[in-house]
Amino acid sequence: MAQQPVAFARNPAAAAGAAALLDYTTKEGQTLYKEATTPLTNKFDGELMNLKLFLNQVCNKAAQFSWLPTLMFTINGEQKNLCEHNGEISRQEVQTAATTYLAANDQNAQQCDQIINCLHQSLTPEAYSKVANEKQTYTIRVGNEDIYDGVCFLKAIIDIAYTNTRSSTADIQYNLSSLDTYMVTLKDSDIVAFHRYVKDNINKLAAAGESTNDLLVNLFKAYRSVKDKAFLTWVASKKSNWLEGTLQLATNGTALMELAEGFYKDSIATGEWLKLTNEEEKIITLEAQLCEATMQ
Image (cartoon, rainbow, N blue to C red):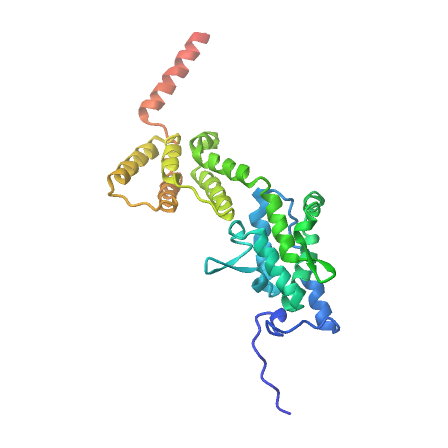
């Protein structure tokens, strides 16, 4: 008997097709459910600083088990993923979508159950207790039944991390306006560590659907706190060129940070970073000699 051609599927969850119900009476269906509901590798503690890692894990698992369509929302005519654009998708929009697919008893309804059972096990006890207090936000009334929805539960987790969102984003905006203060705290004016801090704050703002308009100004201000004199001269030149319009820099700071990091890495490689000038070395030597003579 000739074998039937195999239909392409990126993973077992997608093999049945987007509209097909998963058959949980079969061994295959039960195995799929068990694997889909296993916890994520790293449990989420509810802290905003760890939200990005948590959502990346959710997104990866969503791709593996075909949850992505359930996590997509149309915002201003564009399809957006809740994991990546959570600040732009309201709780009401998530609840409205859940009411529709839960009433339809379709594959989305099955997947939302997978999602919530996976997420239940992917929170620390402290984070879970906070989300449990918001049960009304992820409980959807369908007919005479109250159903816990997985996508609404995910939104509740995100909202908990952004408790008092205005306060959280205000703190991040303050961090970005005080980059010069942070630079002073870094050992040996570590530009790579500094940029890591800047990008982390920018990503947190983006996750909340916000941005900063003064990043270039704040970066230049922070670079003036660097202890390397050659770097200070270089930065002054770049700022002058930028103000004159001869150097074009993207407002997101990426190009400027790449240039600064390149200077830093080259200086580290050649041993020039924080290297004393001949004049400074002479002064230090004279001070040491004076101190020694005074002690005698």
